[in-house]
Image (cartoon, rainbow, N blue to C red; front, side, top):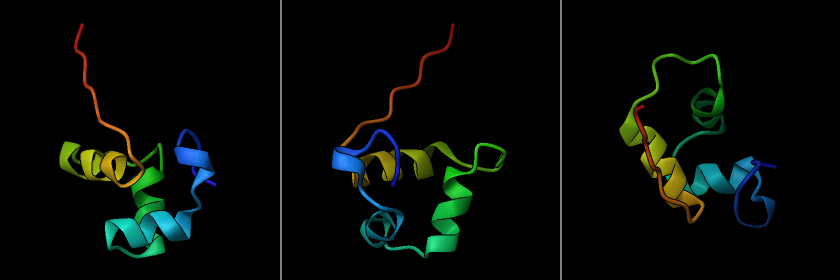
Length: 57
């Protein structure tokens, strides 16, 4: 299950919503991945009914 999503959507369903592979989704969700883009994070948020907010302090 993908934490923090609508009713705990699973990774297979999230990958389908993003129109990507499960392995690509795993890279997207990997906290060690330093090559993720804001656009990719925004698409992922939208796929699970969320919005991405970025705050710099």
